[in-house]
Amino acid sequence: GIAPKIGLNISETLKIEFGMNYSQSMGNIYFTPFVSAALKLDNSISFYGEFAPYADLLSASGFLFRNPYLNSQYLNNAYVRYSNSIKLAVKYEYEKYFQINAGVKILSSMEMPYYKNSNVSGKFDVAFDDVRIYTGFADLLFHLGPLGYFYGNVEFSATNDTAGYNLP
Image 1 (cartoon, rainbow, N blue to C red):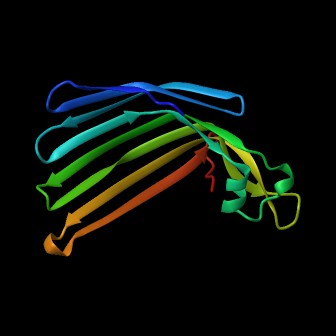
Image 2 (image 1 turned 30 degrees about the vertical axis):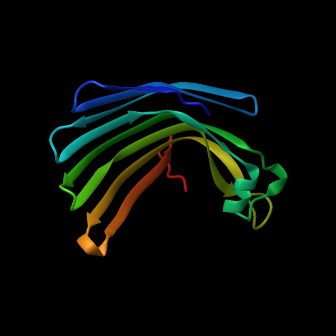
């Protein structure tokens, strides 16, 4: 896709970017605006926010790579539109010794693929549903001096359809 953007430094503490995402595949066109902002409160704490809907082409071979037990007779490419993509985060830094980023991401799509049981024994089919994905995350970076850097992250995610059922 194409994503032209413009960035503005409103002040030394506030930065804003905005633009448009354009993608096209298999006759599908997806054109959405996006915006992000960063606010630095002091030398230690910063806040980030982003609204950036996007689309993703998932190939039939990619489905088979992730799950070799798919019923390939009815397998097609999928063009998945994430009509809502919001990310909010806070970053805490202590000089150069450590940095912690934590936040939430919310995604929604009316055509998210998932695997369901097939009529063929031992196989799965790809189905699509209207879903919401809620994710909490934390990224940790520690500078251990001459020993180098230590990085770790943790992410918790829940994917639910509109009826509230969990999807794998």
